[in-house]
Length: 190
Image 1 (tube, one colour):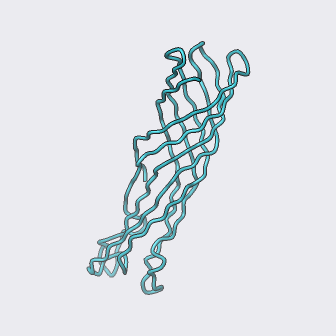
Image 2 (cartoon, rainbow, N blue to C red; image 1 turned 180 degrees about the vertical axis):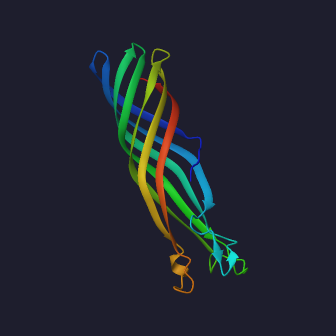
Image 3 (cartoon, one colour; image 1 turned 90 degrees about the vertical axis):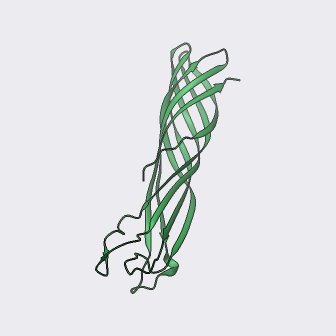
């Protein structure tokens, strides 16, 4: 389930100069985006009782806040322009939801109407890089990109309402959570 959303956030950090054109640092950020995508649960479309499934279950994956703490290594390519790489642990808040409606048509996927959700804060890692440029005495503008991987979020849905082997509405969601973030930032140097 791929989707795109605008993200707003804040960042801060500290740098140490280790050579005339090199620096190392640490940086933390926090961001929020209302990133959500809904679709039919894979593997639930087909035929049932000789007819086409009319109401397969739908699933929604929603990402809200994220945060990271990263090390940073940079090189001054000009006195006012820094090229940097960054990496470290990252957190992502994710909510999975699933619903299934029964209409009584005989070709409904589920035996009962369901509506469930589960949320977790996932720990993963992030890596990226960017360019910072001094625009005024203490003001900097930045353009950066980060890739983050939070592993697979597994959640069993509709477990409490199954009467196996007659009616078994259960399914397990396996959602691989990865983000790609392109950003533009403004910073003030204290």
